Each structure stands twice: as C-alpha cells, then as structure tokens.
Image (cartoon, rainbow, N blue to C red; front, side, top):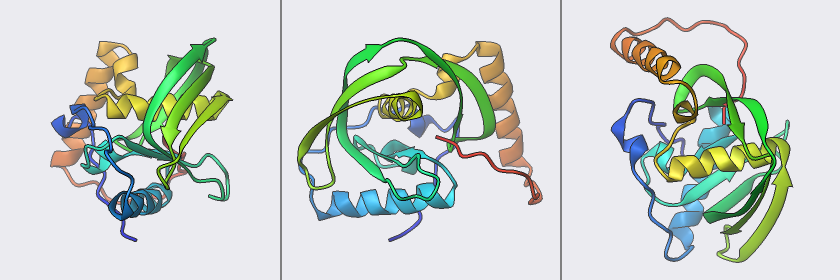
Length: 178
C-alpha cells in the first residue's frame, strides 16, 4: 500500500467530474487500499479518488473510532434523500476549515463493493452526510460550494497564502475531516 498526495482547494483538478469504473479489478482494489491508508494517515473519515488525482468514481469511508469499519463505494449513486440536517464539515482537500453545511439526513445509495458486487445501503446521520460529501467530490463539488461566497473566498485566500508561505509544524488538536 502507498500513501497518496491529496489535492487541496483551489486546485482545478478537484473540479473535474470523475469517470465511472468500467470493471473492478486489481488496480481498483489497490487504489481502494491506497486511499484507505491515505485517509487514515491524514486523518480523515472519507476520501474520494478525485482528491488523490484519480478521476474515477471511487470513495472510501470509515466513521469508526478504531478504523475497523472501512466502506468502499464504486460508482455510487444516491437513489433517495429525505430530511435535512446541518452538520459541521471539514475536508482533507480544504485543510483546517470546518463550516456548517445542510444536507439530507437520510439517504439510500447504490454502489459496487471492492469485489465489484452491487449493493444498496440506507443510512442516516454522519454516514449519510459523509457519503453525500464524497459523492459531491466525484461531481466536481466541494463542501465550500455549500457555504457563502464570502466564506469561500476567505478560505481560498488563506489556503493560497499558506501554499506560498511554508508554515511551521504546530501541535494542535486535530479533528477528522471528511
């Protein structure tokens, strides 16, 4: 397995639309394993392939505290959305920022698993929010697209400045990002 580089906002490659996976084979399974390793190391609870510069419709998620429940969705498609929930979201591609985003509280999603077998999952709460967040990535959207343009510009400017000026490592409490 290998840790992959995560693209950061405002990198234009994050705005691409990911292509469907034609066949789940060993290369896709390796991508899934590498994405999980990258996500856990970040640390995060979700990662889309587009965030590691692979324009394929693959996402990985693990909302467990001990990294014991990895979930892989290949070619995910939301079939149903109900309710509404506001939750603070962060993103591995928008490091250090958390904002409140409105999303559906309950969803049903159809996808392929790491063996290429189709499945459906109905879920709510954090897992539903995380799935919606990651599918947004596959469609070229980021959580900052769900907040005001003023907040989005502030985040963009700060990240661009940080990219130009190396920051010293600091010991701060970390929150997991989606």
